[in-house]
Amino acid sequence: MDSYQFYPTPPSLARKLCALFETTPTRLLEPSAGAGDLVRAARERFPNLGKNDIDLYEIDPSRHGHLADCGHLVGLDFLESLDLSIYSHVLMNPPFRQGVQHVLHAWTKLFSGEIAAVLNASGVREPATRDEERLAKLIAEHGRVEYASEAFLSPDTLRKTDVEVALVHLRKQKSAEFWSGSILDALGVDDLAEDQTQFAEREPPSPQGMVLSQGQIPAMVRAYRAAWEATKESIIAQHRAARYTSFFEDQVSRILNQDVRSFMKKEIGPLHRDLQSAYAKIRNSAWMAVLNTSDFRKYLTRKAQSEVLADFEQVSRMEFSEPNIYGFLQGFALRQDEINAQMVCDLFDQIVYANSENCLFYRWKSNAKHQIGMALQRKRFILSGFSLEGWRSTIGYDAQQKLQEIDRITALVTGQREIQDTLAGLFSTHLSELRYGKRLGNRYFDVRWYPGIGTVHFFPKDQKLIDRINAIVGKHRRWMPEHFAAEADDKAIDKAYKAAELVSKAILEKVDPWTLPQILSSRHSESDKREAVQKLQSAFDEAVAYGGEENFWTQIARIEARPRPATKPAKASTPEERQRALALALA
Image (cartoon, rainbow, N blue to C red):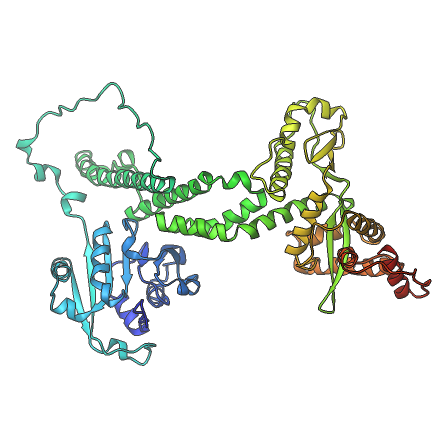
């Protein structure tokens, strides 16, 4: 059963409907986009109409992915839209059951412009309901209608039906008195009197703010609507003033016998374009307020913020309504685990990118393929970018951000919303002591600062914190088995790290310093990354050939699962035997 009554508009009918428009669209709305057939016909007829000039509603979410190239999706149910004043044209083939309601809604919410719609002919030819009678009156006063009996039986129709359709065109315009005309004739010269307007010496008191007792989201939507209505009225008033001012300009030009418009007239663009520009700014600001109100920035790393904002650019084109806001927040909540894991990876990359000595290497075999992975050193890692210029009394903004991100990830990994004794706070309150070499710390890290070379050495107090970070990164990037338990036996973990330190030292001696940055940084091409991974694999193979342990995570699992061997292994003679012998000895 088709609950959405989806009947794709045949291309021939779509072209005929677009031909009803009497002016060129500057901003087009398609309230029931379906498969995008009407939009394609409109862009064919009006080549200057680009994707950014078209907004879409589509109630069926399964069709949203196919509409990406047609325009910007701004909502689901067109009948819930509140204001259409930014549009110059509305083009629609609505569900027949609600066709008349769609056209009346468009007419009511449109400020001025044209509407072209495909409707069931029976309700237009013989109106039986109050809505149909209202539409018939609008057509008689503001438009025209054409009928087509076999529009959905043409060869280019995907879903055929023998229903007769009506092609309705309406044009909504403001009266001549509203825009221009002779003010003196409209009012009558004899009726004019001296202007008695008085202006108050003081401005009226400003509002005290909106009450949020009914919830932040409804209050924000109310504030948004109020802001838009005030802005819209202001823009319309400017355009009306410009039209009326032109009357006086014409009169002065005739008296002086010269054009004075350049001295008196303020340049004002097309009304719909000015409305659209202002609407986009207010809507974007409203969506940004959703992020700020929800404390997104406080708990996201800088890279996570930028990725959310990249997706948010598309979200911010949606109509600012309660259903859309709740939908956005629900989608964000569903992605929270993925975003959290990515934030841990961001910090991991920052630490490894800063200094290759911060990193350990390991490898495990999956599907007959060796997967190479990385882990942070448990005892110490080093970050740069903490130099202190002579005139400064605090560390720089970027340095503060690095510390704050370590604090954020520490809170995330330890299951807290935020930690109390932060590293950022430590540098704020004890800068002088740290500057002169004193080793200080919080609950999770000791730090030692070398401002001359601009590095800070971080010494984890709880090595399980680093183990959790390594496990999150390893699983997220498929560097290790998903079933691996981060909380393993301490002695086994220690032994595994010692083995990894030996092989990692050998690997770092065999690769150039650009290998890790090429793998981790998004600025490098995929071919550069593949080449760097191959270098790392070759160095790993060479290090393992001389007896290094290649898989310390699997080694931990082996320690947990298998009993210790009763006898020592025999001395190995080949590289493969030496590798197996070393693994058994460490076990």
